[in-house]
Image 1 (cartoon, rainbow, N blue to C red):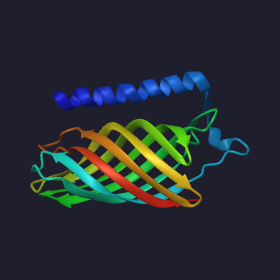
Image 2: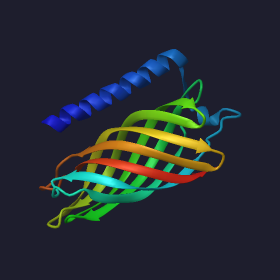
Image 3: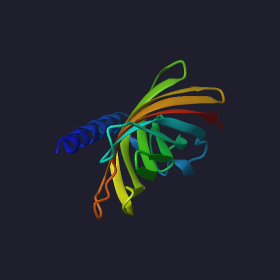
Image 4: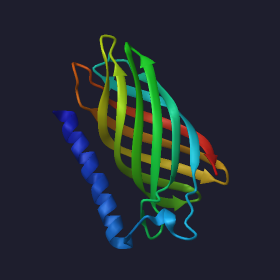
Length: 184
């Protein structure tokens, strides 16, 4: 299957980036318990387009929330791992789905408040294809760009998400999602 190969390549690239970074910087576990550790949380509204299968050829509008912070569970020496928790929803083209996604990402600052990052995605999707609805395990990969300046936050993610199939309900999808929010 073509998308399985794409997913594998995305995941391998993310793991390679993460492994390279962890070898260079060293990893810290339970960094959130360290004195002086800053979570630097952000909350943002999201909106974008999604191409889902087996839906029609139309692109679906997707919207939701993104909450991200410096990861307190596993962290590099220079705090480059940010955990993103997203809730996304779509209800178009005969498909209704709500996903809960967790994505730890290795980020690289590129200057003036901009950063780029990549990582795996795991989650749960409640998908309804008009005939049946099921809760599906989801996995995939994401790459994103972010901008932080004072309290202002914005970003753009390109995400692939695959699901297992249960009783002819499946929700494999690509999404391009824009984000705007507040840094705390």
